Length: 353
Image (cartoon, rainbow, N blue to C red; front, side):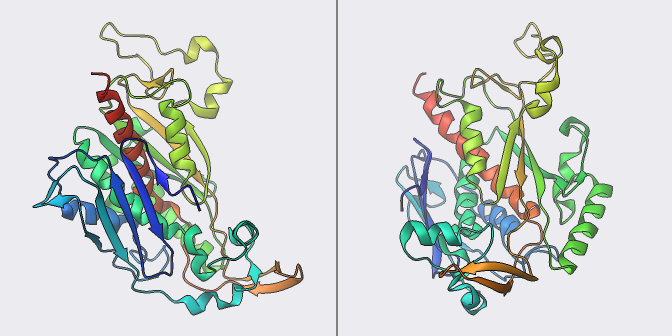
């Protein structure tokens, strides 16, 4: 299986399955001399880990990261950073009922057809549990980019949308509630809705918005490695993501050019920011902002029809511990992938100076 590495200069390679002994990764290209706050890295993992609240999967995993190389006395050495996250709460028997059947909208069918067999325990390599490794690497990237701020938050759950620009929100309130929505009133409504959906054995999707502040001018490599293109790839590589838009996004397609153009101030900043901080595929110093759409979780705790390996129609009933809505736990993953992209381009940009 290829496709397990992300990035060019700041590169992450991950390994492991949902119900294997452990997950882990190798980070190549991290510069030496960066003093790391290891507690802050664990805090990022704690934001993603299962079992953290009443509206997420109740799988109980501590998600404790252990570093095996590349860090000495809390400082990066410039060599590859190796780390491991052990799985401690697998319940593989929850998945024996799907051993010979394919769950709709999962990777079961395509993995079986592509590789000839599959690890059916929690989806194996296709499980979103793999994203824990991304959070570790993203947390290190954040500390390398200490002057750049990454803030992601939940702006939509189902048909409930937070119709406010990020400039009107208090982003310090993101962690004040279990939904990770910076609007307290909307967060309460979203929480109630997610619980209602879960009580029916169903799931619901949502939107995570992200803002990156203090990005220097010049990040991005035209023509095919545009900054927004790499951000889009990063976000679309996250499990359950169905869409990505930055700046004015799809709404910008309905505007006139006279409305959409970002007029310059004399210092090079712009009066508006419909471009989302990126022009010509290169950062222009303004805030980068984007939305990431997540589909409803495919596993339903209710009866449904599907097919087995023989192509016969069978009736299944979802089992196991699953998120009724992934977006609250996806917030740190979106931040992590954004940090990996910015870190990679930051290092590429240094090559020119």
